[in-house]
Image 1 (cartoon, rainbow, N blue to C red):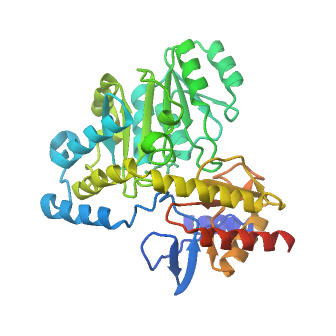
Image 2: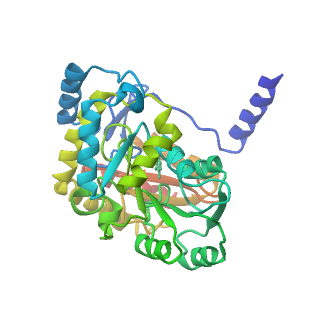
Length: 386
Ligand SMILES: *Cc1c(COP(=O)(O)O)cnc(C)c1O
């Protein structure tokens, strides 16, 4: 029986400390969560600016629903591309400083669409070893030759590029690595893209809204000038507080993606009410220097608070602050001990991270207060001595 086989594999996950549990939240996304009637301070979400339940976004979504309904009714190329989608694409292009933008339903779908539209058999993709799962899947789907370089290692990447005889080359990287929180060396990557005639595709899921002037993202953070080799994907379900994703690039690349990215062509356009909410979200992001300053302060507070403990924090300057534990079971026990104290921090285990690097992934948000971070610091300090 096929179900018996699956049950056996599920039992093995449980035994190896790899079984995930799904909790149902009884309150909207925010620093305070309630699960099974229990109150918890949550350090789990990617809602870095605290916009997911912001009253201005909620009002924009309600007005959007009244004016445009709920569903788009079709894919973008048929009849689902409504006014709010067009407006949002324009606003995103202006904000990110690219020629043109294209909306996708999710970041996962955007990545699955971009890579196979740009490269195929006979081409080569050069990918950072710690890239997000969606980028790894995208490369497989493309059938291009996949070459993974050690994390952020420009010299290793250059050797691979120099040896490549592929027809087309594409460098693929997270801008902010989703499980480590560190930044890719984007200026060096762009230089190599120029030197070896390659494209550079940057996944800015965790940088958009948080890094750079007015939250314009990682490319702005590094001050990279406009460049036709550069293609940037940003998600709209994290700092932007809603859902969806966009690709920003040179106008020719965007037109090609609109024609050929299968996850764009063969799917229903996102809800217009979300596009309306996102227009407001962009305004809040642009005006969000105070939120970003507060977030940076919380990051410093957490790092300073744990500096003299045995907890090993990765060198992350972003809202993603992983505490490396190593062993899967020990990580799960630590997360459980925090949970008992009313602090919810996810335990991240393989295959999401490499074997032996299981960790707590603390996500901070501008919606957190200093007292909430202080509570996490004091619990972790206590558990460091346990
Ligand atoms: C979350 C994430 C995605 C996927 O974006 P969704 O909009 O959630 O599908 C892609 N890349 C990275 C690096 C991410 O962290």
